[in-house]
Image (tube, protein in one colour):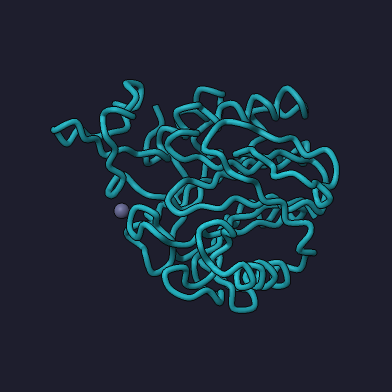
Length: 268
Ligand SMILES: [Zn+2]
């Protein structure tokens, strides 16, 4: 089982900014040179409370015009066309899209919770407010994947399925993968009811009694990675709880009605 000591812990010191947009970056991805990525925060946008300020969700009640302007600020800051930012209609399921061509002209909502591509200039975006944004990079085959892992996706083993799809469809090899888990709600704040608790999560959870569990979703996803042959030194994690750090992140558990932060990755 994965141990804390063996993992590569990233933290708040990895916060940088581009044109007033703060973001976290894994230096190990940055040095590759052919991929850009960022785990953005809630800061640097124009949305008003309770979506303040860099909300990137069009469907939670915020002004659509403001959300568009937030999106444009992001794509301008990071230097790519807004039409190249591919956003999913995240379903809290385990659908995984392999992007083989440009997605910009796609007329229908993309009902998936993960994306994989080997095509340059397609920036895969994941929206979260407590769930885990996970990026996978195949350093050799030059493939990237972005995964949205919440409780339901985690229960459906979306992370494990995404890795399998990378191997089966794009010829990726486990040993070449570099995985980064972005900020998400931590076991300090993530309480769930036994009705939705899975027995296999017990090693990563603390029973609170009265049918309540404090669950470490990130660690459950890391266990899925381990089951796919990923070694501890291939896994990087931003160990920042979105609910504890409400100044930096939107937190659904902490706020209820709130915005969504963007995390994105793409091949340049
Ligand atoms: Zn917390």
